[in-house]
Length: 210
Image 1 (cartoon, rainbow, N blue to C red):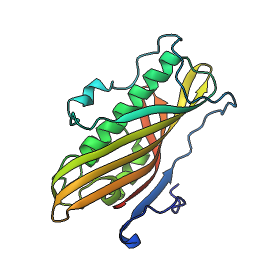
Image 2 (spheres, rainbow, N blue to C red; image 1 turned 120 degrees about the vertical axis):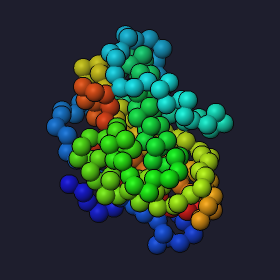
Image 3 (tube, helix red, strand yellow; image 1 turned 90 degrees about the horizontal axis):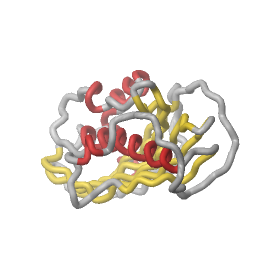
């Protein structure tokens, strides 16, 4: 169930203008204590086919600002090729959300099915309620230019396969229109693997002007 924000406030010119939301839905599953690593080994088995590949959204990403996504920590054992596959799949989910929610202008009406396609049904409903935070629909911007796209992933692996991911992200934009300036969205996304691929089941997100 949604709880009140517990993260640190995002620095802005006026703290009252910072929006923060926190949502975590409990997902059943066993936790496994194990090793932690911030590097991706080069050896390992080929992963299963999973979520949409990063190439499906790369065409929509401005060439001058690519997403910097890396695996930061792994709990449990996960071969290097599978770490790479998870990184690419989760990156594609996040890029698709960013592109449709923040980098495309003119969302007077939010199509939650499209914008939050990578979210579970429960998280999608909550994100639609938090659309002023989870999209740029409130900005009425004429143009949006990405300045930074950064993602760091913490993976939980069980029996050699990734079961859940915490994605720490930092997205910074420049807007023009009714409000010109630099906008920052940062926080965490919590993802679980479903038959259809990786899905966001919870989030802890802050949004504010820099």
